[in-house]
Image (cartoon, rainbow, N blue to C red; front, side, top):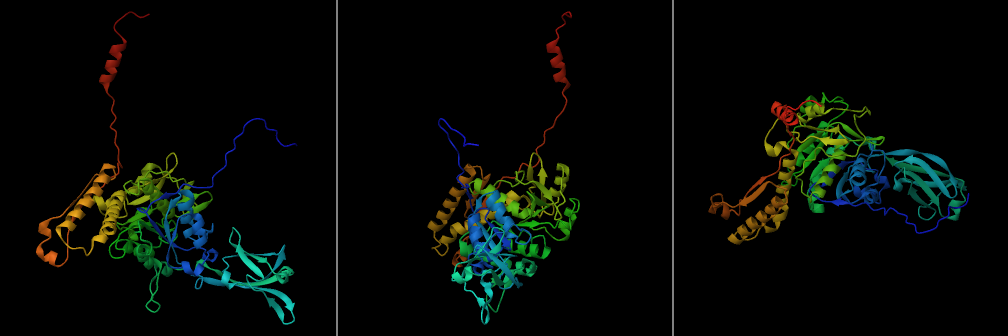
Length: 496
């Protein structure tokens, strides 16, 4: 058939390939887990260190990416943050060490076709690869040299490609390959929890959370470990760390409930209490989310959604992350069983301090309470939005006014701090981000003894907006309205 004939003016649209990024740090995600670092540019440089990424391309270059979310838990967070919500920046902390978490692959022969040998083995560590031509020399096998005889690369699915570049290598019909692969299955809870090694002086796992501020200049807003936070020992450390980062900062930690242990919604409240997921700086999430044909831990999705919501709200965490469309295809447990709850069932979880998913004209986040509820009804500790605003204000005070530390403790300093912070709070009140805010300096709290000790005390009062969680309409039948309607339509005339 001949090519289609055109006559006249035409326009054809083409995708730019660019995704508009939402940027912000109020909900800065710090995510712990495992990544396929064998695919990274420098695998050993991204172990137990904060790695800041702005988009999926950067994440792939620095950490590697795989669709095997169960093995490489950071990848589901990459997908949620960069593909589903396009929010940045995100801080990833990978605990998979290619020097420690690895396995040796059996030596095998592979055919060379069009100067390329495909090695269908996942996780191959580039530095471990040795390539030989069997029986190519009198002494036996001939060992080839990387970058001289061959080049290494990876396919989209993470398997290895060996491209022959020298005449000797191109002439080979078969090559022998020896290698090692990263093995995420040997990463343990202890690797995630981490600690300080007194011998090497190095820190690992959740201990690296304290590096985030001094290394990046940003304070953590949301700390998560999808694929790991459903383990009580890890969650306990996360809750403790989020209450005092660097001794001064705070963050919210996102904890998944184990859907194997609590596979029905009725099991979740009791299970949450039994494993002490009750921290005021924590959000407990149940169940998991289905994205296409893959299953994602809710914390990966929730963290991306909250971070995006903050960024879209002028980088202020004043909006409750509840009743927000998530763009997923379902709610499931670990074995893939689909979960459908009505509002009454979802509210049962909310009443136990568990955030869930509810399908009402689309799958939505559902829940306003921190993990501390119902154990506490203190406003600032009970509502997620209020707690996050208090954390945000506390962290902001530290980072903004740190430059004033060690200044002369005179009236000019006191006045400048009070004025500057009141102006800042007033701007958020005017924008509807805060219900109220005020800073005061009380001379009675700052007597001469405190001044001589170099201590100044300011009082900061803020009122964050609580969520309109329960909107009640009282509906009744009004007989007077019926009587008036009948009187107006019939005035005693004869029937037609």
